[in-house]
Length: 392
Image (cartoon, rainbow, N blue to C red; front, side, top):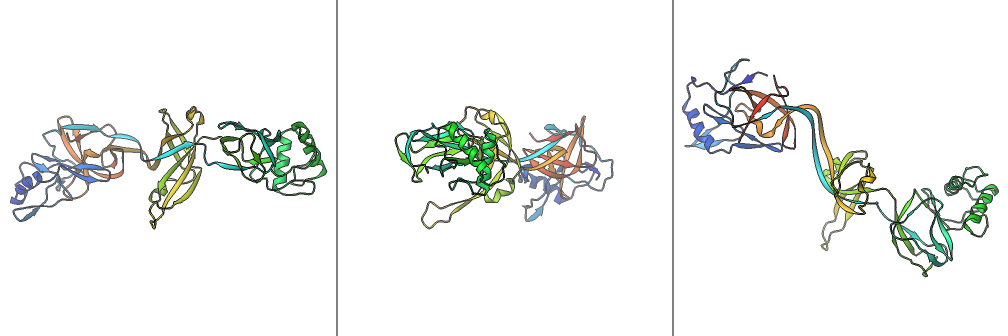
């Protein structure tokens, strides 16, 4: 692609060309392109313009910087642009920001299955780990163990299944061995259960009644306590609510922007304390909310859950509104100029005005990604460090 320059002073101008100077006075100095504005340069002997038609004295006239039929050696423009900028080589990121809620994720309700009176309850914010009491009924603990399957039945010799295997894994992790972790509740499993019960001062029955153990994926954090000390429990009513202990952000996006939030997508979270933390989208949910107006259409949202890469960065922040920055597009190691440096060409397309000492020349460019006020460009002879013209 050859360079180009404005039309020479020596070239005769037609009546239409003379009218173009008048027409360009009626046209804005910028035209919208992508996410920025591209200027129409009108400098002495030439005017740059594209995409606009101006009616003057009943005639349609368009003005522009022309490349003409010149070859590689193009005439220089004598007058310099009012401002300049540098061609840079960089990685361009097109980002999109949405609000998110920093917290500990969704809450889970713990229903009381052991009948009696609550004699000890945790406090909101308490963190419970494996083998530790969550609360006490009749001064006997309800204990946390790790697992994905809820404790839905009493476990006794002869039982088999995933919940039995979970129990066996936890007993082994807590130091009560002597059996095979195989999902079969044998006499050896029952012996380990009795040793565990003795340690907790529970009746040494060798079976685990429903509700004595609560299975959760990991450590839990108490969110709210519903049934306090001296209250009766055991009928399945709510005792408390808990969350996980990992700090995470929940961000909602419009359905039209769901392409931004894919599982595994890397994002940046801007915290209220000024720190930026990276994270990756762990889960995606579709949320449908009923309309506040009777008979109105429900709203559909895409909800992205993002665990923080550095949880300690949010230390001291229990809950907050944060900014989640998604990367919509990325171009690595490309040449860029400010969007305002683009010049619209009469023959179509765009160029930049390269400044070399006291002279300038026009180079036609192909544009790529527009982001953050800059645009990716390619063109013959373009390189990092060149100076290009800018408007005031």
